[in-house]
Length: 413
Image (cartoon, rainbow, N blue to C red; front, side, top):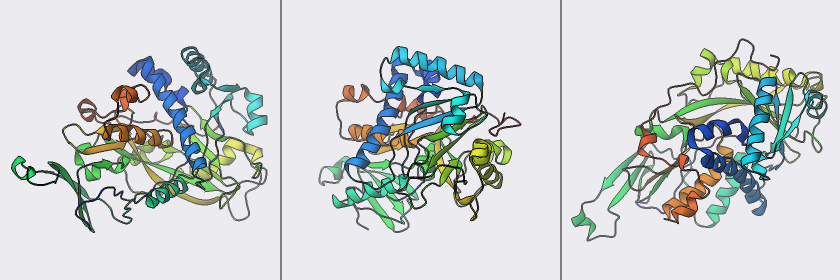
């Protein structure tokens, strides 16, 4: 491999695709921890990311099953629904007429008739979307390759080493005073600037992040739709989440352009896995699935849709299931920027399972930091809470990211 390179990303794929912010669920806590101005920035950033991701796919003709549609949060607990309404009223007061504060509430009957879900207290809808994140990234990489990107696939980074050159030698060479060596099984490369966009895997190559960004394994299943479920080209007109108090599950339907149009992709069931979900903390093994979570997710579609699911497909309900690794920080916010005390080492990671509404604009913010763009302009839209600092790097994730599950954590409470 070449000793020096300009831009060399190393491949690591994950699957996702639910572009939804659910900002009303975090807004009160963000106001309490960060203040109103920062909370508003976060809500606006999440919606802006959704719009820009789908807009980018559309502008560059990336075939990634992009659907910029509303999502439906199915709420099973009346108290939760009432609290959400109170939060939305507050958001609309402090962000009047802004689309990030636009939510519509639906009652119990409307939830069953419009969203085909019986037994819920109500529903909240708002702007969101879905896409194939794999296809989106492939399309993005193709654009970059046309512009000269050097992409090294099947080349895992196993470590980083900082190299400091003394001033005497630095004065007689064009080599930067500080550079980084990226260690891989296929050889090492050197660069003055390195970006860790490695999310839950970050500590594996930069051990100082151990406990700062904790990998957490999640699980997803793809199911053939039941006989009563609407399928493309009409299909379900929303993406879904099912909020049952002690947790939530999330769901999208594959569009007509998918390989399996109409399939239901549903993930969650975090608390039903071993030790109430604790087995998934610090776990980077995405080659296996948890049996208890598999059983829960397989049953969840009938639990949620009831008679509206109908008969299972003769080929079986579950087509495929898989796991993926997320990255969580102690304070619940991404880490973006230059690592303190490590010149030339940058990070954009720790997206708390919500990378689809963070990654795109966090990358834009990081690019501004690297190129030294006007800081005031960046601060006008990018949350200060997302910037990596020495104080944030001292924090360790030592608590659950979800409440302990209740005895009955499925749809019926």
